[in-house]
Length: 426
Ligand code: GDP
Ligand code: IMO
Ligand code: MG
Image 1 (cartoon, protein in one colour):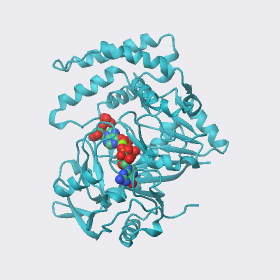
Image 2: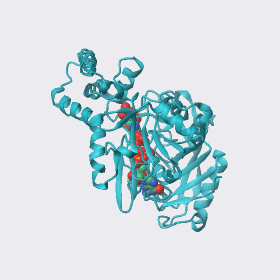
Image 3: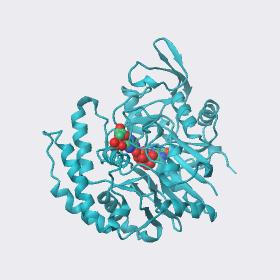
Image 4: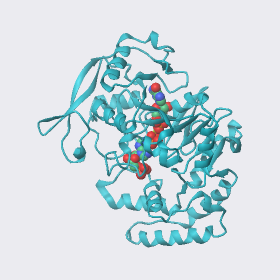
């Protein structure tokens, strides 16, 4: 069997959690391969909304294993809080959740360093979720990190202290930044003890054995392609590879074992945090999309920046990821528009650009739009694409033609049931 991948094609929050939950019954294993508690993945069913940060979005379905892969960074305190929130649902967690021994740990000092560094950047700040993501990945690539497998070592405390000492020396660069490590360390150590109640595995072996045994695996991306550390709007990005290639390094899956790549995007576009966003709408229309789409961060609660769909940006993301099918999310958010717009290309210094340019941070990118007649009616009660208004069907066809990839799912609301299947993929 091959590993299917589901990932975001924009700047995150496309609705990955919802679709992973919808697709889970088709799989044996759901695995996260990068990112950490900067992610906030929302699932809704039977009238309840759930937000997951580190735990894969397959956790609510019986008979499915959820794996936190080696490419993920784990804050044990946040992880524990997520598990506590799941308690009322009586899921047998140890039988459905395992973690990689090679996943890196977010220390309290990583979070402090993240915050100090953002404050020091002033108006150039990244707009980080302040979960310690950047400093943890820095320690990973700098070969100083602590991993889940280390917590079983008799030398764990010694290793922890050595890393904290290094961080304290780094924090001297920010003399005005006040922090209290003592109050964070106790809960962190307690959460490390709790982490031991879960099974830590050699996940690359586990997953490759599973593939060999014919098990079906879905890899769940976090963030989005435009936040990828290599291919996103650097430096306004996260610190991991959010693209398909990240599945290989973040799970130990060989490239030859990658199957379907499901790219997920909103019928419009959003971004949270700083950085370029060519189709951003700062006026009334942006405000209307934010209100109708309830565009506030699932992790930080920050208002998301909103804009129209950006076709060159999506084509770029499809190219990088090798996307084989698309899910279009939040179509219902555009239910109260008579017309909508799609950016078909950009103008920079009087020249036409049909692709996402390198210097998008530094130049004035003028999006050129095509106006599209919208459906202007309620789609949230639709249960079949056949019953969809002609204008919505036409929008889907228009995007399929522009993007040259089939849209197999159209989502018309946050609930599991508000998911329309557009074409059946063999
Ligand atoms: P993720 O990070 O990609 O999993 O996405 P988030 O959970 O951060 O943000 C997506 C938000 O949109 C959540 O509040 C979802 O409940 C909601 N959502 C997902 N699909 C739809 C949809 O089709 N329509 C509407 N109105 N909301 C949706
Ligand atoms: P999900 O998985 C949207 C953004 C932050 C910031 C930048 C760097 O829910 O789609 P970091 O905390 O990684 O140092 O922040 O990336 N960001 C996200 N935006 N959705 C996310 O995850 C994000 N994770 C990080 O807002 O601009
Ligand atoms: Mg999110």
